Length: 181
Image 1 (cartoon, rainbow, N blue to C red):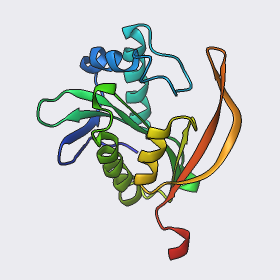
Image 2 (cartoon, rainbow, N blue to C red):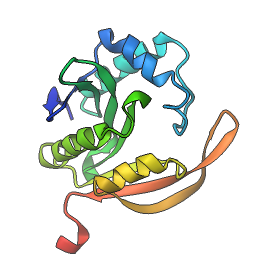
Image 3 (spheres, helix red, strand yellow):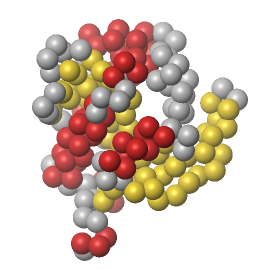
């Protein structure tokens, strides 16, 4: 699943490196950014370094794709986008994303997601991409729908983070929609 770089009109999606740790920590230590995640906000820069190291290892072993989302104009790190839980035999993976709240509502995830999904279907030959979100996260649900995902169901009481129990909404996107098969 190794990818080196994907470029869009405004963005560069590339592998995260150690030098990105500080900016990555700033984004994922934000309680608002992490509000709907299945883990709490990062509390030390070591979490960012560990995430980058594990992501690099997973990329090198072809088990997932984790890319930083960078603004092409100035190189600023805006967030991350991932393909993970890859099941090679079934040609499917899960997509996930997180962006600095300063860039919410600016089409960043839509642009990055469109590029990564195209890569997943055309280059990685995936048949299906899934997403799992907190149903209360309306913004992520809207982005997924704009990317072409369909709500496929709910998993009740799926997560507990800091004593708060939440459900999951499951979304799916097929390389070839069922009505075209």
